[in-house]
Amino acid sequence: MPTFMHGAAVWDVACPQRPSRVAGLTMAGFRIRELDALRMVPHPAVTLVLEFGAGSPVLDCAPGQQQRGSIVAGPGLGSGGAVRARGENVECVQVRLSPVIARAILGVAPADLDGAVVPLGDLWGREASRIREQLGDVLSWQDRFALTDALLARRHEAGPPVDPEVAWAWHRIVVSRGLTRVDGLAAEVGWSRKRLWSRFRSQLGLPPKRAVKLVRFDHAAHRLVAGESAAEVAADTGYADQSHLHRDVMAFTGATPATVAGEPFLAVDDIAWPSRGTTAFFTSSGSSGSLPSGHGSSRRTSERQRVCAGHPPAGIR
Image (cartoon, rainbow, N blue to C red):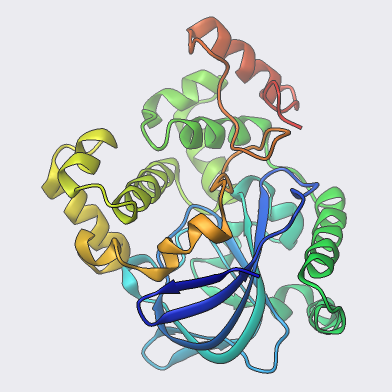
């Protein structure tokens, strides 16, 4: 079990040896002796934390508001720097769900979470307690991952899918790393702008414009963590200038780009989420999906027609 060390943070991190059977789902395991006011940096996925250890993670969501134990939160958890995590002797499996599959697995649409951190028991009832007991009973992280994957796969198979047009719009936003022009998405799927905006938000939990900004921010933030300069990141990730990047980072995290570059929540991703494809469709190799070579309009139209007919993009398992 690799150990992640970043400043004062010392965490044991486990990763599944096999990809999930559900496209758009990834997970990692954490054992943390002391978790001290960790800033939760917004991410374009639905976050599911399944805790089972002797201690319990505590999320400070706002002055006087806390959530303990297993939780669910929609895309953009921690926006504005409003959420901090702490605790002692924390053991948990953290799952990242593409918003496209979250409704089927959770039993509610991400929009129904209303931007809040929700106790898992409020959604799953006794099943939340059972999964906690089962995770605590097994001895290896790989068995915990297998148990979690089996549970989430069953829920995914039984749950309702999102509209194929909505899935396609999300796919386009993700593979472009937030550089898609949102005004063109409705035309691509053959819907009115009003219809796409309404369905997208109700099924995925955020409007298309917010999704574009969040995906773009996530890509830029990881490049800052990798050591690239703010000026270089701004120029390469679709921001008008460095000041534009600074404003976006402040809006999402409540911190400057220089501070975000040192956040453990992001720095651990190279160990915990090596593919970082959690928000997209997945290929059979586990990397995030992409449009076929030659992004020509005919190829893109063909891919869109496949997805809107209920099929995943070519090459997606």
